[in-house]
Image (cartoon, rainbow, N blue to C red; front, side, top):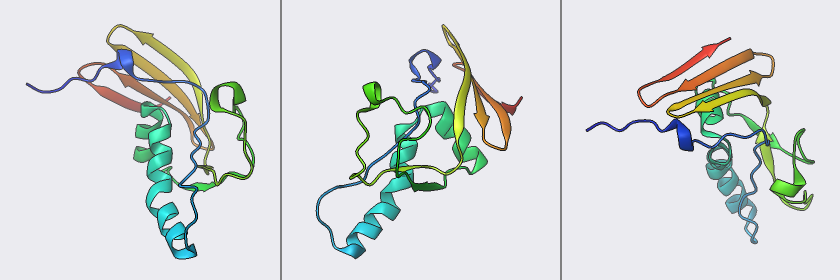
Length: 132
């Protein structure tokens, strides 16, 4: 029996995605390799599934070092910002614009910096992504 997509339990919120890699002592070569292997994948894991799907399809997964909290950062939910931690964010900002959720239905609309608005509609039988 094929799997179905469950839009009722898919997590969506408006907090920006951040990620910090391993923080123990490493050689410069180990540190560079660790960052290259994990940064993008870990950041994609840290964000909402619909945003990750959209970023992957639009090839908007380029990241950069975050030297301060990004717009929309919520220290009460995401913890106080620590400048001493190595932290990454996506280069192109994607903002949650609108969300609707019902039983077996999820509609999420994002504003993708310089690319306009994109909608992700998810039901148990389909995923529809379109520019709106």
